[in-house]
Each structure stands twice: as C-alpha cells, then as structure tokens.
Length: 143
Image (cartoon, rainbow, N blue to C red; front, top):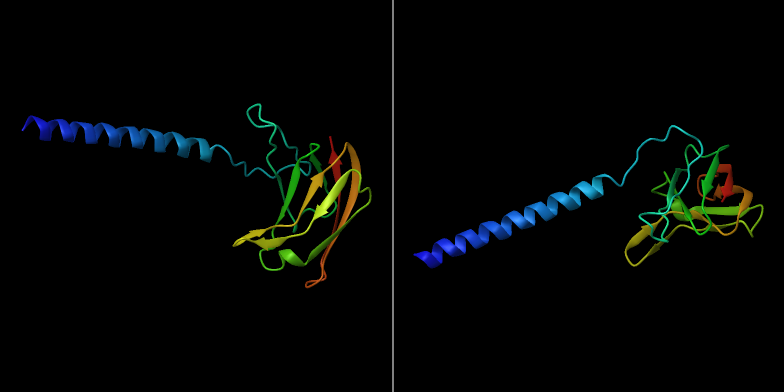
C-alpha cells in the first residue's frame, strides 16, 4: 500500500512540475508578440544579448510610402499576401545597403518575400507582383 501511495505522490509531483514548466513557456511565448502597428517606422533590437535579430514584420498592404528601419544583418518579413507571395520581385536602389529576398516554398514551409539589411544607409525598394500587378515602394533605413 505504501508503494501505491508513493507512486501517486511521485506522479502528482511530476505532473505539477510539467504544468509549471508549460505555464512558464506559454508566458514567455505570449510576451514575444507586439501587435501595435501605430508607427510607420519599425526597428529591430537584439534579443537577450543574443546576436540573432528578430525579423521586422511589415504588411505589403500598408508599407507603400513608409520607412522601415532594420539593423545590419536584420530581416524585414513582408506579410499580407498568402496567395501570390512567390510572385513578388524587388528592386533595391542601393544593393550595398539592402537585398531583396524572394518568397518561396521549401521543405513544406512557405516563406514570405523579404529584405535583408546589409550595411548602414538608406535605400528605396520597389516591389511588383507579377500576378496582381500591384506595386509598392518604400524606404529601408539600415542602422
């Protein structure tokens, strides 16, 4: 009888520990997002002292005429087109400052088009969708 009681206590402790761990990770994940799109300029910052930069999320439906700020080595993820995301092409006025990255499907995952900050400076980006004929033009400021 003691063995059964001990097994139940151990199971309860393990379950409690798993719930605490799950609660902590859910709390951390929910703190990652920021839905405030109030400003036209967005900036990437280093995460927790890491060299990895989070992507800047910019919507293709509202980016036209804006300035997007990104750190050198940072990435701008251009969202808002889940149907023809592979059909966007981009021209960057100064290819030393920023580079266009085409949308693609790879390994069962879909990747939005984007911009990578290469060196400090500013560049104008003009993107055109070959299917919808939509064009957007915006400035990328790399810091």
